[in-house]
Image 1: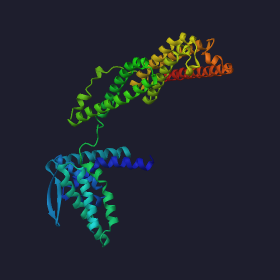
Image 2 (image 1 turned 90 degrees about the vertical axis):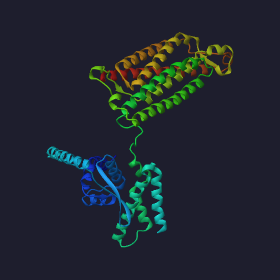
Image 3 (image 1 turned 45 degrees about the vertical axis):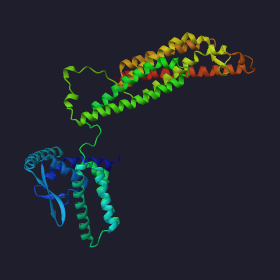
Image 4 (image 1 turned 30 degrees about the vertical axis):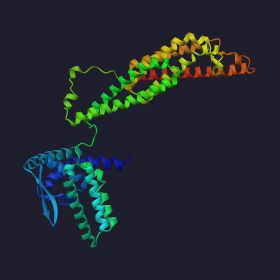
Amino acid sequence: MTEQDHFQKLKLELRRGVLVIAVLSALRQEHYGYSLRKILLAKGLEIDEGTLYPLVRRLEKQGLLQSQWREENNRNKRFYQLSDDGKSILKKLTIEWQQVEATLNTILE
Amino acid sequence: MQTQLSMINNYLSNLRNYLPDDLKQEVSAELEASILEQIEDQQEQLGRPLNQSEQEQLLRAIGHPMRVAAAYLPNQQLIGKEYFPAYKKTLELALTIVFALIVLFSVPSIFSNERIFTGVASLLGNLADTGLTIFAIVTLVFYLMQKSGVSLDEIYAWSPKSLSNKADKLSLSRVEVGFEILFYLLFLAWWHDAIGLPESLQANDRLSVLALSAEWQQVALAINLIIGFSIAINIYKFAIAGWTRFSLVADIILCFAALGVLYTISQFDQYLAINIELEQNPDRDRIFKNVSNTIGYILGFIAVVNIWDIYSNVRKFLRL
């Protein structure tokens, strides 16, 4: 395995952990799958459908998101938004993330 | 356009095929909306419709329908990583016990069989067959335990007080030990056959023009014991997949015993017995000398291997 392969693998592991926070955070506003992907991409987080859509579905199953099918531009789409449980979890995760970031920055300095 | 739409429809129908019934429609509809909107976005940027190759590229970027569908399924591992250590240990234990029992119970029937090599081949087939069955059963049991959510705390129930002291060991490949056991079994089969040859000489068997001399009977028991203990030690090494102080010492003792037997053999007046047919052959002395020399070389080689084993085992012992 080359250095680049190692880097890609570690980068993927690193991103996997923060992906949930990014998705929950983006879904404070209502989005359907593709619009969520676009907004994350616009903010610098590229994520493929094969990862994003199952993740969103899993979060919905865990009760952190709520969803509804609605027609928009003559097309049926499933819109997702943060549930009350999701809001509470996001709040806790955000605090946790900020602590991790601060700790890590101290270590990296 | 029709071809392009049918390509997307085919992609979605494949995806549905890999999904469970309760997810088929929802997942497919969600992905279809996403694909069509991506196509629209790209067409708007390019100012023209996407051609077939560009649509193909878009579908390729999403991934193989089987992989996409797999991401929606809850359990993607036959045995999850949390259950795996217990699964592996159980499998090792079950295989070791069953293999040891099979070898133990097969030895008498192998040696009572007229064709010993057939007996050994049947033993190997039996081992492979039973091994696969054990593998399937243990895997199935752990899969069901995982699926029914058997608590990991129950599987890994432990107490620091009940932990026993484990002997240090150096890792060892089970494949290597397996080959060693196989080698000893084949040798034992050959030896059992060869030591019986003087009787067949009397029957003037054409295949046994030369046979081991009667002097070999002096070391027959010692050789049987050394090989028998070697197989037992190797089964132990196979079970723990490593060297311990005990197995190293036992191995060293067996090597010294083997050297003692080799020394005794080197004192024989003659290694071989000759039958009547060869007795009348004018090249008798040359054949006899050549074969005796070859046996001498083989014995020398075995002695060198044993000395090397002693040296290497002492080094391993010092590392532990």
